[in-house]
Image (cartoon, rainbow, N blue to C red; front, side, top):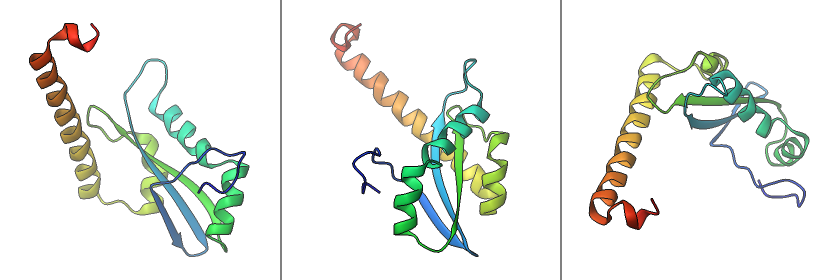
Amino acid sequence: MCETATAPCIKPDLVIHTEGVILVVDVQVSWESVNRTMSEVWDLKRRVYDQVNFREVAARRWPGGCFRFCPLILGARGFWPRCNQVTEDLLRIPGHLKASCVNSVLKWGLSLHSAFMRTVWAKGLSELGQ
């Protein structure tokens, strides 16, 4: 999707053509925060794609449909936030797929933490810039 010099290069994770609608889906794993709710994270992700430059490039690449921008936000500590309801309804995501997504996030987080701790124990904190 890098066709314009003025727009940053952004690539959605999934584009689905259905019944005259083009669903643009992008997944994000996000930490829960007191500074930003998951609904705010969902809206920020939607706005990344719901802008003029992206629409122009996307309309050339996928002509003939009305665009819907549907983020899918997953909590880094393993939960499915309510803000995904719009995306869930549009994609008809069944419960077992939601559970699989959450499970994948938890496995990824555990793998990342394990790799970090192996490095800490192998090199010590002084070599990691602490």
